[in-house]
Amino acid sequence: MSWTWTSLALVALFFFLQALLWKKDTKSNRLPPGPRGFPIFGSLHLLGKFPHRDFQKLAEKYGPIMFMRLGLMPTVVVSSPQAAEQFLKTHDLIFASRPAIEASNYVSYGHKSIAFSPYGSYWRTVRKMCTLELLSTAKINAFQGMRKEELDLLIEYVKEAAEDGVAVDLTAKVSSLTADMTCRMVFGKKYMEEEFHEKGFKAVIQEAMTLAAIPNLGDYIPQIASLDLQGLRRRMKAVSKVFDAFFEKIIDEHVLSKDEKRTKDFVDVMLSFLGSEETEYKINREHIKAIILDMLTAAVDTSATAVEWALSELMKHPEEMKKVQKELETAVELDRMVEESDLDNLEYLDMVVKETLRLHPVGPLLLPHESVEDCTINSYHIPKKSRVVINAWAIGRDPEAWTDPEMFWPERFASSNIDLRGRDFQLIPFGSGRRGCPGMQLGLTVVKQVVAQLVHCFDWELPDGMLPSELDMSEEFGLVIPRAKHLLAVPTYRLKINDNRL
Image 1 (spheres, rainbow, N blue to C red):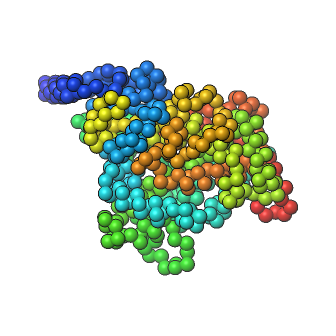
Image 2: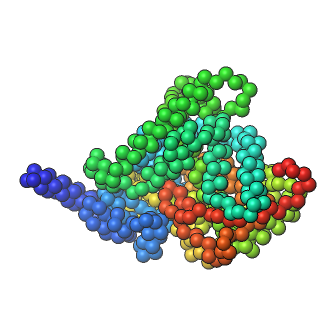
């Protein structure tokens, strides 16, 4: 017992001395305003179930550039378009790196993924490879037929439900759709849930996303990381093992495949770089597996979540739903389905997607950045190795940037040049600068096509006589923020196609 108390006293003394050194080091520098926090734990106690909302409330008190310690980690929270531009454009290079959080070590093979790897020559190499070889316009267009096939299957399922007059679980069906699309693009074929793991493909991906989002005490207080007080490391190892076994199987299947005629998928493209001297780094299996996981987590949950929020907002606002349908009737007409080539002509749909991503950015806090050197922004000192959190959710609700920011009002974009490419910092759901999402074009294509098809082919009513105003819009927090409850709705088929073909 005496040994235990002595150890605790030594640990407490260590943290106390470290806090004094930190205070001495920062006293002469003007840090951004923020809550003082407690020794050791800093301001962790101020964050609850929804950190993006908690950060927004704190920013209302302390300002759009706020400094706080989360545990022992100096953290800067950015909550306005003007502040975001400073970090993501003016000083982009200084903040282009990522902190080495424990989750990324396990689920991205030692920080080898595009999303989590630190800024440097390796990240530039794999980012360029993926942008040119995996996410180019030509590659996205090559899978257009496949996306149509999968969407046609969903429409047929919903059409049968409409004939039976039953509600459709849109959350589940759209999630399955995006998972199937992603598997076919990345792996070349769909996999049954049980082929992946007994928990199912989607469940394991969601577990990985959850683990990456849960505040990990070991990340904020590195000295206690080895204790794994929350049991997160154990869960991360288990998920990593499942992914690794599945990816090894996928890679082996592709290496042994003799089918020369099949369409080359993402794994084929990455395998063409295996051991290659064409890049600065020799690409090995771990690199390929890390990038595969990037593709899965970036495409499956994000696209599905954006679609379900868009449909939710349209069902909650029937007048806007009718406007989308009227535009589709004019541009496409009711005697055929929507094609991807139609999307560029659907201006109101584009406004609906922008407004959805403003109110419901798929990643509310984006991914954290890390400063590689000291920097001064707006006369504030930003220390080297600070973690920078961009609160895209708060920026989308900034009353100085948006009129009636809590209102779903797609028409706000009617006379606006604001786009989603990260150049307009009041709307950055895909991030901006060097670490902006490279899959934005593919993601937007999938979201627009799925929303357009479901709204064009069907009228929708909420089940059990529920009024639009009664639709529950509560959310769950994670790397993405999906609906807390599945979206259920009863479809009525509305097309006037003369034959039985979709």
